[in-house]
Image 1 (tube, rainbow, N blue to C red):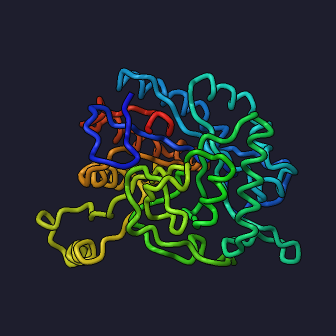
Image 2: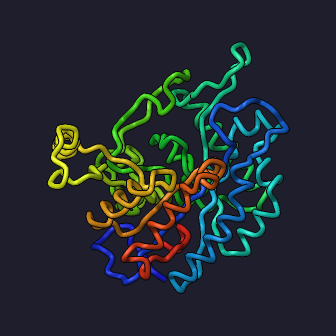
Length: 334
């Protein structure tokens, strides 16, 4: 099995580890507090993911494993009455994932219900609320499945040094939140109330590393923390059109922005297919030692009906390095 060193020289293994990470969550961010709410995207995506497993195994000649990150936070508890609701409601699917050798983790958003306003606040600026949600999710996972989650990842790429330290103290071995190259932003949801802001991920390594307690974006070789950060796959948004073939003013501006101040993005399966392929190829051209590709479960509601996800997967199946791809777990990567 391919291995990626936490620190050290570039991996020369012939296989390229690929982590396909599914964020299992409701079909929207600011959903109603309705206990009867169904997670239709996840339900619809189960058969498609099972078929994808077969297709990828046939194409690569190797067993295929996925990473499933379940929402077990205060929003889930507020909607369904208990934070471990998805692990209970979809217990049969969870057991099938374990039988297939997949890995299970926790996916945390920081939404707080405001009874006086009847809506959700993105409360990323309250450290106590952040840590409460982390403990809630890790404890719910452990009480239901009898072990700590194999990994964690925040929603909206939110992270802080206090949060990574708590995850380490709670015995979570791996985090998969960081998107190297991404700039600081106030929020990903303009129009909705929020506190705090999302930190810059510029300068963070693109390979797995143990984070420094003082700054989660910096590696620490001293062994202060056990947790390992596995960054998601990002690269600059290279313009998709060739300026040589189409030298229009609009194309010129796009290439100028790319040359002067490139904007990074994550190679997620919910990107449009050409952009997804461009981001993957950009990361590989920069020496990526692994690929970590996320998809939200609500994408199955929209992306299956219109063929979007099939077009994105076609980019993977058509990739010239496909024979090297090993769809594995975070533990298989390290």
